Amino acid sequence: MENSSLHGRVLMEIETLIAHNTPKQKVPQNLEKLHIALLKKHYNATDVSIDYHRRRVEMDIVMDDTDYDPKKVNLCIPTLHANLWFRNLYDFLKSCIDKDTKSIAFYAMLLRMYRKTDTTFVI
Image (cartoon, rainbow, N blue to C red; front, side, top):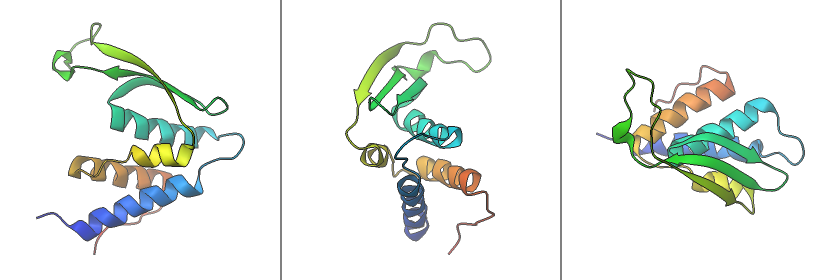
C-alpha cells in the first residue's frame, strides 16, 4: 500500500531544497551536482552540463535502455543530444520532479545526502 502522506512530504522537501538553493550568482559545485542528478533522473540522460549564465542545459538522452548491459563496456547506446533553454531555473527543475514510487525513493536519498541529517521519513 502506498503511503501518500510520505510521498507528499518527500516531494515537498525536494521542492523546498530546490527553492532555497536556487542561486542568484555563482553556483556551488555540490548544488550543481544536485541539479544534474535531478535532470539525469528525469530525462534518463548522460553527460549533463548546465550553463547557468546562458540558461542552457546540454545532455545526451538515452533513447533505448535495452542495449545497456552492466556486465560489459557499453560503447554503442543510442542517444539524442539535446540543448534546452530554461527561463527560470526553479520552475525548470520543479517540472523535472516525477511522482512515481521509484523517483520518490531517489528523492529521499538525495534529501538525506544534501541535508546531511538523519531525517527519517516516517509518519
